[in-house]
Image (cartoon, rainbow, N blue to C red; front, top):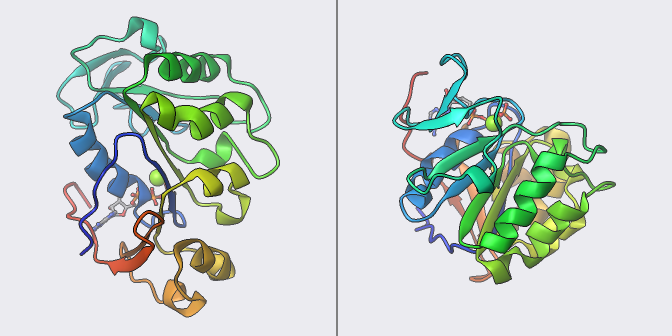
Length: 222
Ligand SMILES: Nc1ncnc2c1ncn2[C@@H]1O[C@H](COP(=O)(O)OP(=O)(O)OP(=O)(O)O)[C@@H](O)[C@H]1O
Ligand SMILES: [Mg+2]
């Protein structure tokens, strides 16, 4: 397996159809990151918010309280003890989400954070990239703001995401997307189509290196 090195200011794109393992993969790695630096998760589905826990969000390991869901976790109320915070954005790719906008600018100012956009197709598409997302993606590196996105819509990824990312991961995708995704991760269409559950292609532009990887260790209920 590739030894994934995480650069705190990197950009990474995670592709895969629904249920292919993107979120699980991100959880695994974000846990490692969160030990070193604060992580902010943009989560349209509240999956990371510890739904059903009396309106309180916990970190996804269930250990720490993160504050109440109806009070979005903006950086100005950031508690330095917390390593993981979530924000549920408005998921209409064409609307400006003021909370998310403010968070993005605050993070750029603060630096030294990691931001993960789960299901980014709700926030930015090929046709519509909010300016604050563009700023995070384009200038975040200079501010030590690492950013990952995951999406099940590979054809709709904004160009700016692809041109600025150093790392690309593809899990299983729809047959019709295999060509596009193969191009992104430097694998053939057939190789992408043959991906087994939770196996992933990893392409790193800094190493000019693409490799097929086995599933990451899975902890959790099936
Ligand atoms: N490495 C793994 N090994 C075994 N099972 C896994 C693994 N990764 C994910 N799963 C299983 O697959 C389910 C779906 O995974 P996950 O939520 O990560 O998919 P996803 O790509 O984020 O899907 P969606 O696009 O719908 O959000 C998980 O709940 C888990 O049961
Ligand atoms: Mg997911």
